[in-house]
Image (cartoon, rainbow, N blue to C red; front, side, top):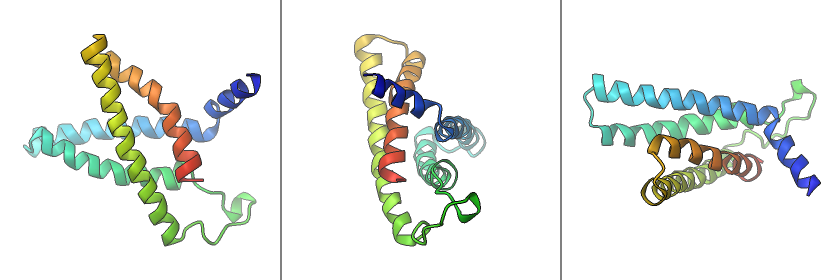
Length: 149
């Protein structure tokens, strides 16, 4: 039991997790700004704006995850650089896995919020916070250990 508790604590105090949280916050602010701009100034319908946002967010979040959050150490950081680190095939494989996870987490987010809002009666703004707190550790763990390992 103690072993798992220490593992959880180590996970949440890691630099990668802090970068993950900060990047998520920045992406959230970008998303709100993007939607506001496209709906209010470009007069694009909210549904279409949200569709475009999902495409943009996928590519931006993948790039930030690969190059900032889960970046592999370079030669300058004292570790040998693996020649396959930046290979096109690796990026395509990571992109496929990231897309699957992206869709999975969007669905999971929707499903949990639906249950909280419709069946439990939690207000949507509170539900959003609970859902983020529930999904965040799983999202970080899977991205770190399955997509960008």
